[in-house]
Image (cartoon, rainbow, N blue to C red; front, side, top):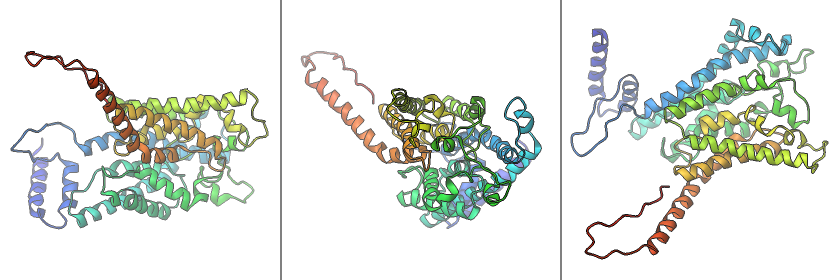
Length: 421
């Protein structure tokens, strides 16, 4: 460690003592612990010493989101210029994708969304920390990165700022802050935008930059998503590789299933996210997709039905389009708002995937349902855990009722195994 860094750390330590007990102490402590690990230790009682804390766990999730963010820079520019110039989809897509023009346009459009999301959200966090006199909570470190990735690229900054204020205050702070909220804050923000400004969150003119401004002109841009085409029983020209790698219109960071999959594996390997929720959500979406495919194959629905396009869509391809994969990996696995018991996680994840595909099919006006499904299951997660625990208690009591009582003079009694939740 250099002398300069030691000097800087010592100065921060001196300032920390200066702010101790003052009104702005929570704000300074948040900055201090972001740069250096806390140096306080307990002096009595047993305690566990580990190398990580909540802030480091949040930073791990952010690292899993960085590739998605970088990809969004390129894809934002690519979708815009492709809509204007008509780039060919086959063979030369990489030549037109990895260009400085695409990256620069995407950077100019996406980074302001990130800055506003973090700036407004952290400002609210600091204000509540100073008012309540507690430490600044780290939960918004991830929320601030998620929010700009789940909105259309041309979302007005003032609109995003209003939604962030609503999501942080109503979705989290009124419940007591990080760890006490019952709804995912990022999805609460997305829900506010959807219901307050629906024309900016759905349709065929919001997913590609410039489409709204150019509507009505001879060279107007149409940025319909694959789900939008299917909701209208239309056809699309995107290949499976386009859908898997993310060369399609959509929300800023939700298009690349490949990078989302890598991020999910990283979170599982680092033990930050629950693999049970991810796997069960995938199974739930596949089951619902298979049911719809079966209805179509049985001839129970006509080709002229408004539901035919999405119901006939290959069941496994639902995971490649829209925000389903992104929601499963980064939002359904939220440890605060998700189920806590192992069996509950299987039920919770399965219902998220099942309901997401159901909403897609039966809501053609907005053919995407993952954020509504996750918010719904956030509400029911405590109920799921409650019945899982009660069921486990009943099984234990039943085993106890039929257990053999050993004599009192038995030196050792074999303790029956208790099934874990």
